[in-house]
Image (cartoon, rainbow, N blue to C red; front, side):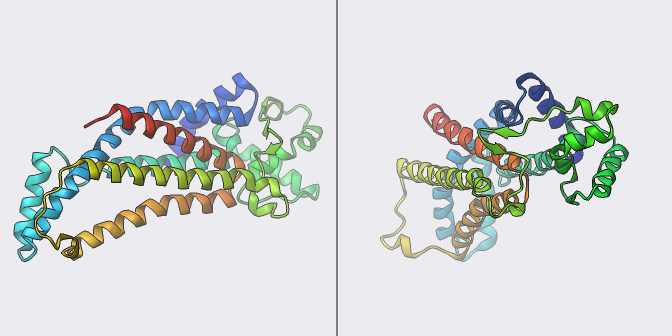
Length: 290
């Protein structure tokens, strides 16, 4: 499945790259197009987030009221979801889509000659073997990146090869080599620029999301069940809060980890995606009131 989407994304990115002539700029435009395609889902997610925040306050009331009757609590909560026209799994679709995008684009960036240039794997193996014969170290995980890096060498060895002559991947972007992998260039400080900016943008995004959720809660009229309501949080509510915190941290941590062992082109995609997501959330928060 991931290879299928990586193939589609590769066609799109290659078309953009042929038009602009720069891999970094192509990734930025590619990210913008993907964001526009995903806009309807983002709008739905924003509405769901606002509804979910309001729903949590009503759920707290039910949890307190039926804390000694789990079966009744489950029935009442399901009725509440039906009344609000929401599903308990409404946030799953967005998470699944994000995961598919994460892995598919990772495949595409890892194998640009396969998914962008559509070069046969058997031919790529010939290039790798020739590089090894010439004493050039080839990464097992990122052999296609090494082929791009040693393109001039291979063109000398295979001057009539049409596949090599059609490769047009300029990975220099504002002084950064997007083919570099931070793990392989630990002494090169430039490989940390994009990952660090990505980490900063991730924390900004998380801060904005948290702020929106708090704002949404404060705008709702809270029902005061008891004066000691803050002390009456049950185990279910605590578990939900811990689960939300874990989910909000899991994806950024996983993405940062991958960005250190993947070509910088992937980290650039995540950075641009974060910046666009921040702007998108701020705009949609003003537009979507329900």
